[in-house]
Length: 508
Image 1: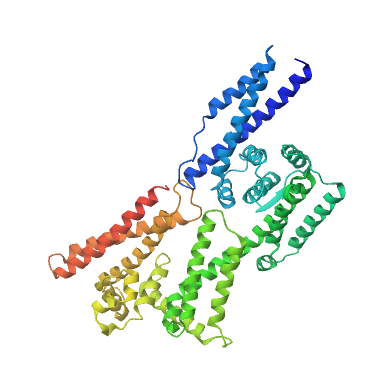
Image 2: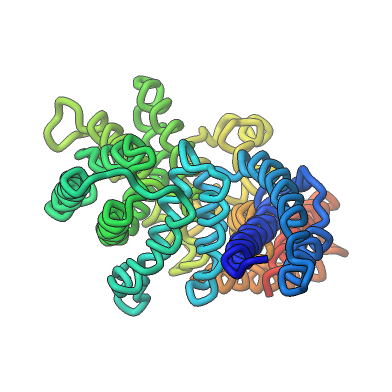
């Protein structure tokens, strides 16, 4: 066989081996995503080692005197890779752009470059470059072209010369671009124009209102295969890095303020309902919708899938509620009443229970709910009220609450104070257990959450000892109902304690 023919066979083998690596890499991603994110079985069975051996055998034949027989070997391998490609593309339908982002954002950037290259090659060899695949490729190319400086919280573009070499190598899989020089320059100018508009944005609210991110995405989809012209793609990557940095800069400023403002509003919900819920059911419906949107926001943050339009919707909904509260009033009397009720609850709790950062918001929640009840309606009726049911309070815990309010101090009424504190702690522990139960055990928890949970568990242990002490003091002298009440409140606390401890133990 002529040297030129051997060279062509060798080039064909190199491409075949490269495509196999791309399919194998994507198979590893599918396997991990289906198991850890989608929680379902991979919808195919492929013997990758056997396929690899067939491809490798073609390489051995090329080097031998029997090189003409390498052609049918490689043709068979190419057909096999095409079938594998079809199976993987079918599995890819469930790996949406948010799912792919969620998975890859958890990889260390120092570890993911080669993985990203072969994921891109999988889509290009496919070929699968439109629709959702375009969004996924856009994200992957941006990962190739950016570096994240954690110390500065900033996304920067990688070395331009190196990036050009990488992009040209990747898109060489596709047919050459048919754009002439003027068309390329026109598209690059349009991309840079969109980038410069984003650079002129001065706030997160303006970025959301401008619609520039949506406009840029639609533009990239309209490009079709022109997207993969190296000069056009380099301009897109540059624009994506700028857009990402701009979004993260404004988001970091907005996130904390949004969380604080929305939490204050949610903390005020009981007071708002007490003050004028009956006269304004539309307002209460809007607050309920806002609460659901806040849950969606928290879920998106936890799954690395937070989009700017969701933040904008949360801010808009919150502003709408505040506008209702201030409607036609200037400095609105209704909001003043809410603040007055909040301040009143907080003052009473601080006065009765002292400074207790761990339980304060939960004691305030108990006070806000129960103080709205008529103490003359009877203990059983109070226990059946929606307020008490929501907090899952026992009859004697409600009575203890009113006795605490009436007592000059808690020094001589430790048992009633214990009932109220234990009930508030149950609320806190239940809230923390609900959060941990929905949190992936393999994902590390950042911040002070685990410390806060440990504080809750320690406090529960302290209260359990106080219940034991109280039972020791009264078990031979007190009414049997009083003993039963102490036991029941104690065991209810122990039950939520045990549930939280078992979840907490998975993360420590």
